[in-house]
Length: 237
Image 1 (cartoon, one colour):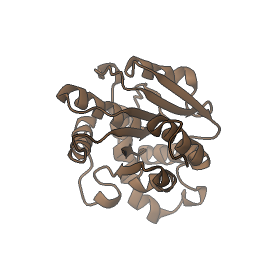
Image 2 (spheres, one colour; image 1 turned 90 degrees about the horizontal axis):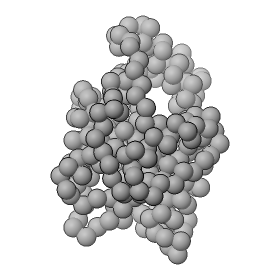
Image 3 (tube, rainbow, N blue to C red; image 1 turned 30 degrees about the vertical axis):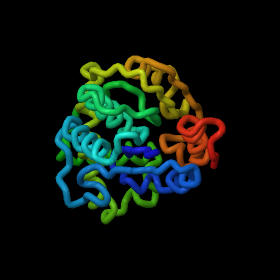
Image 4 (cartoon, helix red, strand yellow; image 1 turned 60 degrees about the vertical axis):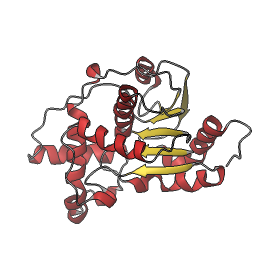
């Protein structure tokens, strides 16, 4: 069983390292995929739109699935849009579908921010947004070396999110979904919109904390994943 994981805006595959260790005893293999321009793929050009991102991730997933192998998809924050777009291609191409979907920390709502990406205003706005989410330590706010490396990634990814229009997402699938959230970050009433696209058995799991609540609740999330993928009689964590 493979669990393909898509990360947040500006993030890398390393975000899932702790979850990978927790799931290892259960036989669930996490396959965290870096976006182009991020992490192990930092030499590649950033995506211009979500179509490019989805096609890239779709090819990776399909190329790693054997005929009889079951798999699942997980997306955190921006990664939830990636999951939805990859699922759209999976349904369109009529290839083997995942057995389960896991979504975290992002409501299915269009976010239109009109900013000149090359302006100082955009730089400050994105830095403050990242800090508010809890994505980086406060001590790095004025670290020029850090921002010289990571600001272009955050800017590129946020531009994808801000250009994305959920009203144009043509997806209806009966693959069941587990949706992780906190009321502080993404209230339940905003998340229910996922039911429009994942129309079968969806379960919502509430936690405490900011946008990156997985850092404090990784073991609990791992247990939920095992329960859904291996059954209550599985190996456990």
